[in-house]
Length: 320
Image (tube, rainbow, N blue to C red; front, side, top):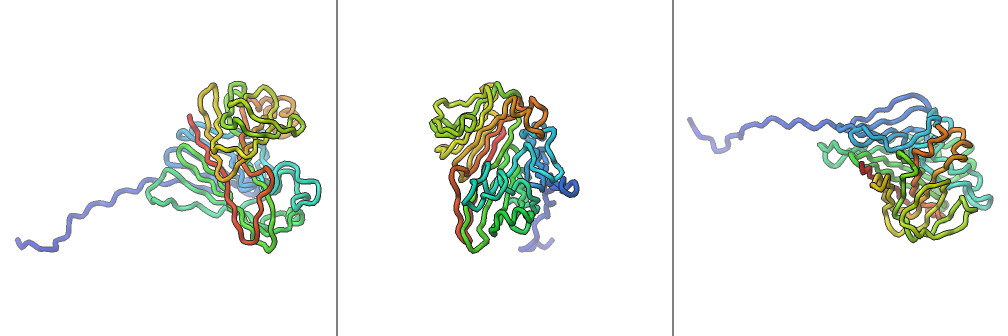
């Protein structure tokens, strides 16, 4: 048998590629949402109305991490009570006059506008099935006529939601598409699902100045390392030096909330009377099973000149 110098090597069968994340668009009209599921079972659901994350399941899909009111409107007719609503371009009631946002409703228009699904981003590794990134977009053309009149500025938003096995990352990119500068605020109004609010504490805000809305918007200093809940809490913590705020249940870490290019955090629980007073908050005692830890840029204003871009958001780790 003649030995050939350039004999081909043995052919090896190609490796079977790992199953990738599944992404589906389900529902119709205002109820349409994007659902992404990892092969290991973790999932996220994003309602196109408001680009609101309404569900995030970790632990192989067994553990729901977000609280959603039983009376949350998921039809695209009003902002969702629960999940992760996107607040832009103003937090809370807008300034009464003299500001570009003064004619807007509380919390702005992002959470009550229909966003466009821009698609699933490819991962760097084609065989990586451990994460999936979903992108959503909103610009002036996607606003209602009333919102365009109230805020007559050209802008572009891209909101990226990245699901991994043990975390959820949500980041917004704001671009000034117009000729004149504008100012804005931004907040991710996240409702975390917990077992018992009386056993919950929030850490990582020690030494930080905050505005207490329950106490007539007076300013205070956080002295204790842990915030505990024995009544209504509505506080805006400003210029937090450390990046991570943690939620503990029964003394055990439950969530790490890591700020990304934002320095402020709101902590909120409506407690008994306020929960009963909100028509879309259900059940009435649902305050026992939720706590809001909301990262954002709400102390003052972010300013963008023509063509400038700003980005900020959070990474949340589920520690179960």
